[in-house]
Image (cartoon, rainbow, N blue to C red; front, side, top):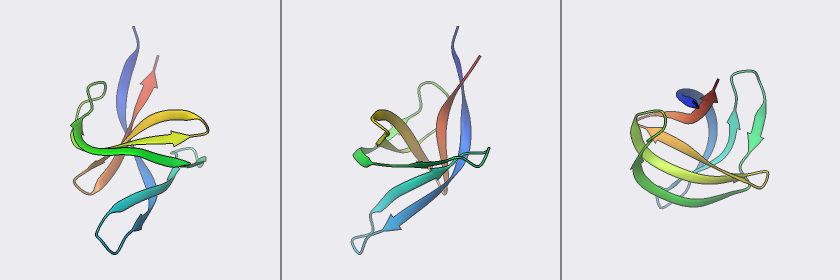
Length: 82
């Protein structure tokens, strides 16, 4: 059975003049940096895998789609654990 946990991450984001927040890169807990190629969708949503809710960003990173959540003032991703 695949389990997921809520992994809080550091995010570099751009704030537009209209007040939009656009994530640019994710700093993983081991120091790895993942650049976001494109934000495909932004909407309020819950994390069905790891729990929690907030603004869900559907992001493309190296040809893979992943969700990045902004929960109040913290960013998290759904990390797969074994």
